[in-house]
Amino acid sequence: MMRRIAVLDAPSNLGLRPPTPTSVPGCAKAPGALRDQGLLPRLRARDAGCLTPPRYDAGDWRPGDGVCHAREIADYSVGLADRIGAIIDRGEFPVVLGGDCSILLGSALAMHRLGEAVGGRIGLVFVDGHSDFRHPGNASYVGAAAGEDLALVTGRGQADLAAIEGRRPYFRDIDVVVLGIRAQDEYRLDLQAAGIITRPVPALRAEGAARTAQWAHEQLADCAGYWVHIDVDVLDPAVLPAVDAPDPGGIAFAELEILLAGLVDTPHCLGVELTVFDPDYDPDGAYAAEIVNTVVAGLRPVTAPRSVPPRLRPTQPGPLAPEPVPRQLRPEPADRAAPAPSVPPRLRAEPADHAAPALGQSVGGPEDAVVGSDPRDASFSAGPGSLRRPAAADPDGRPADTVEPVAGESMEPLDARPSDEDAPHPSPAPGGLIA
Image (cartoon, rainbow, N blue to C red; front, side, top):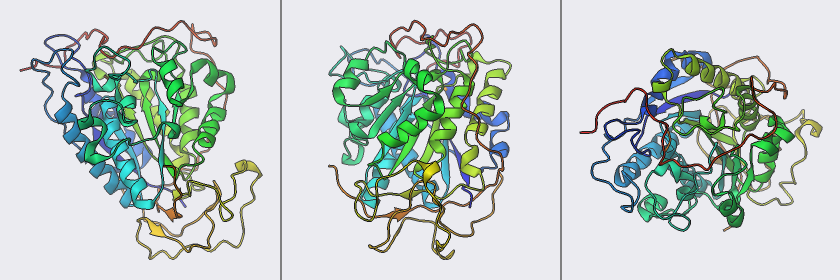
């Protein structure tokens, strides 16, 4: 059985400060630039449309006024959560194209709603070059939500963004794994104090991208499922400078491909979002093409014939849900009965005496045919349930966990500088005037 991808555009740039006083961030153009490189047909994905954001206008905002565009971001997050939820209800795998990192609030809201519906917690794998953990408790002021998104979705910051619909936090600290931040990230000690698990670039490279993905699975073993956030500034600026805050010491495209493939190669991955690419710094489309190549290869496990539909698992292991064992050591049962194809592709309850399948175990039946078709700034137990996914086929396998260093780049960690979303990359081509 295969899983069908649905691509949704979320071209919001509301979470970033303007590159110059008379321009707007260009990342709102990213979904269009990636589509121009054939992303949807290459993924054999359904076009889930575009959620148009409110107009970007910083107006007379000044530091100390709170998060800029807060009301607009909150409204947009509710709409985005509705759209992501509808995709999941169709039994599909959402791929959301941002936009800046503030779109994580919409994804987080959708995941919290889903966790509440199934009686479980949803986790977050946060792949980003920066921790985005600025909040009133560790900074003199806040302002650009794209530099504060991880803090907001873990319940820190102003309530109109951190507690939409009275949900706070959207993700618990212990249900978050941060991958790809620089070794000297400004807020790394705050993450450690909060109990948020991290693997900076040096450790990621030392362990390898594939093993890091498996490690992330293990850290979220108590969650019913997880969402993946990818900010492309996790890549080194030697290979992708087209972001608002490029920092040396990032990973290579091949490493991101392997990492993505490992993260989505499980039925517990519920969807992916991609943020912060700025086409204003990519006049010939070469970087957009490289991103699309990486995403298509990285998402291959989602549409591979061996893919299985997502299954939300209990948040605590019990006699009917044994502790997971390495996937390669677990045999597949030959007599497993497939559920009747007439069951709608929504969350459905299962008998109380039925164990949740182990990772990689195939369930489900015939599926539907494939339908073709700007930068960033508790604990409780769940009953088993499942999400069914329609399908798209792709016989190719996963990439090998080997990678050559970027040209001119050492495999040792490069010098890093503190993240500051409020100090954007100067824009060579202003995206437009603020009225």
